[in-house]
Length: 538
Ligand code: G4P
Image 1 (cartoon, rainbow, N blue to C red):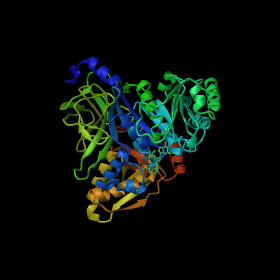
Image 2 (image 1 turned 90 degrees about the vertical axis):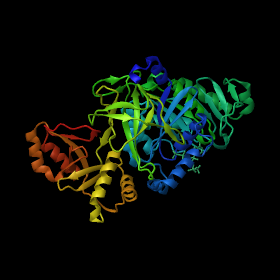
Image 3 (image 1 turned 90 degrees about the horizontal axis):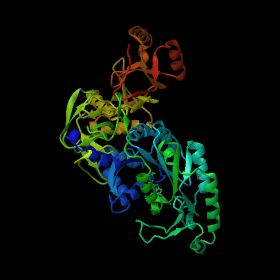
Image 4 (image 1 turned 45 degrees about the vertical axis):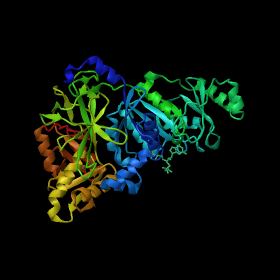
C-alpha cells in the first residue's frame, strides 16, 4: 500500500508536478493557448484538436448542445501531459461569468494560474472577477498578453491597465517589438535575447532565429526602424519597472508578464518554461484538523467538481478528485469521512487531452476521475486512514431564484430526483421551503437554462420556471435553541432548507434583510457556506 511506499519516490514525483488553470475573459485566447501547450507536450498532434474535440462532444452529447448554441464553454475539464520530464495538469475553466462558482471550485484545485489578456481589449470584466478569486488563495499568476500579430494596445499601456485594474505588480519578462503587420518578435528581458517572429508557425522549429544582446548589429540590420525604440523601451523598463521576484510571485503579489501571439505559437513555450521553473510544485493544504504536506505517505485528497452524464449513453457520474498527498494505486480502500465508511477505488481515471485512461498511479497535484453513484459530493475528502476534511470549497449565496413546477404533475418525483442530483453536482443550488416547494438558486441566469435543458434531456421532465421574488439568501446560524425558535416563529415564511438541511433566510429585499439582521443581532447571516458544513444551530 502507499503508506509503505518509498517517501523519496513520492517526493520526486511531487516535485515534478505542476497543476494550473488558464483564466481569461471569453475570446481572449484561452482555447488557443491550451492547444499550443498541448502541442508542446505532444498530447495532441495538430492544432484544432481541442476545438474539434469540443465539436465532437457536441455531436454526441445532448446537454452540451446549449454550449454550442451559445458559443461558450460551460463544462470544464482536465488535461494531463508530460513536458521536459514534468507532469503538467492543466485545468480548464469556464470563461462565462454565469459559471463563476464552477470556476471558483476549479481554482481551489490548482497551485498556479495563467491569465490570458487580449492586448486589443485590455483587462475585461471576467478577468477582474477571476483574479479576485485567485487572490482569495494567493494563487501565483503568470500573465500572457495575447494577439500581438494584430493592431493592439502598446505594451506599456497594457501593463498600466493591469496594475491599475487588477491591483497586482507587473514584472515584464519579455517585450514585444512592433505589432500587427510589423510585429517582429519579443525581446527576452531576462536572458537579453530577441526571438524573431515569423507568422503562422504551428510548432516551434529549432532553426528559429535568436539574437543575443541589444547592441547586436544584427538587430540594426534586421529592424532599422524599430531598434531605437526597442533600446529606449528596454532601458526605461530596466529603470522603472520592478524586476521579476520569485518570492513575490509565489505570494501572489507580482505577476511575470509575457507578450506574444497564441495563434502563431509565439511566446507560448516561454510560458510553459515559466510554469515549470517558477510555478510552485503541489503545495501543502489546510484540512480542518491540520495542514497536510504533499510528500506525506498516506493518500489524501478532495472532490472539487462533479460532472454527471458526460456520456449520456452511460449515465456516468464522475467526481474530480485532487490528490493532496501520498500515492494512488488501483484498488485502494479510502475513508469517506462524511459518510463514515470506506470506499474502494478500483478504477480511477486520468484525463488526457483526448481521452481518459485507467490511472495506474497518481501523486499530489494530479486529478483523478472517480466513477460513483452519488456517494461523492463536492467538498468530500477521501483519505487513507486518518480522519481528515479539507477546507475551502464554498457555496456562494445565490442572487437569482426561480420556482420549478413539473408541467405533468406525475413527473414531480422525477423533477425532485433531477434537482437533487444537479444540486449535488453543483450546477444549481436547491432549497426547499416550508411548504415543500423547490426553489432554485443561481449566481448566473445561464445556470437556469442549463438546468432546464438537462432536466428535459436527462430526466425527461418539462417544467415551468417562474421567477421568485427573492433578493438574496443568507445561511443562518443560531447561538441557542431559544433564539432559533423565536426567529423561526417570526420569519418562517422566509426560511428554507438547503440540501444539507441548513436553514437559509430568503430575503425579499435588501431592506428587509437589513432590518431582519438588526432585529436579530445574535443570529449569524452568512453569504457563503462550505460544502458539507453544518452550521451552528444552538
Ligand atoms: P477563448 O478560449 O478564450 O474564448 O478564445 P479562443 O482561443 O477560442 O480565441 C478566440 C478568438 O481569438 C479565435 O478566433 C482565435 O483564433 C483568436 N486568437 C487567439 N489567439 C490569437 C492570436 O494570437 N492572434 C490573433 N490574431 N487571433 C487570436 P475566432 O475567429 O473566434 O475563432 P477561429 O475561427 O479562429 O477558430
